[in-house]
Amino acid sequence: MFSMNSVMTEEGTIREIAEKLLVLLGEDPTREGLRGTPGRVERALRFLTKGYHQDVDKALNDAFYSVSHDEMVIVKNIDFFSLCEHHLLPFFGQCHIAYLPNKKVVGLSKLPRIVEIFSRRLQLQERLTSQIAEAILDKIHPLGVGVVIEASHLCMMMRGVEKQNSKTVTSAMLGAFKTDPKARAEFLDLLRHNKH
Image (cartoon, rainbow, N blue to C red; front, side, top):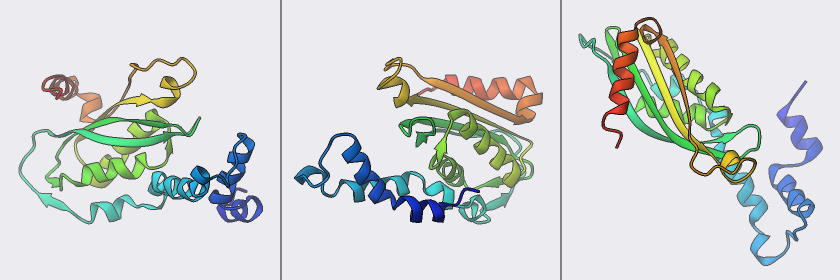
């Protein structure tokens, strides 16, 4: 059974592991430019994976408001950064979210907070897209939710195929966005217009 505590006691802290990694790469962790690197790596990794310790309910903080509005709500161009679980290299881009209210809306700042929680974990873009959509459906209970993510992956840009201009686009459509082609088309059409 995997236990984070046992890994830390048997294998060392992230800082100690980062120091060992520098040695294995042929570096001297005591040289001037690298002396603080293991600690910086630990702090960076803890920040980049802080989503494991965050809760969607706490982020939403009951910021729900009753409305008669039943038209689509869209928050576009939500910047995000994540780490690819295959190589621990960053992928980053923008997330676009739409939902159809079901007698209530959520504070607009809460949608980027949901993106932040799930992107600050080791991820696959496909899973990230689905997790955001499922969390919104589960917590806000809209009639439908659509999420589109466009991202650049350093694991494709810096290594492997080395295609610097490639973008990966994923989508998750739930509820009315899955069953109603008009709702889905309206969302995607609004994304295509006013790309900036």
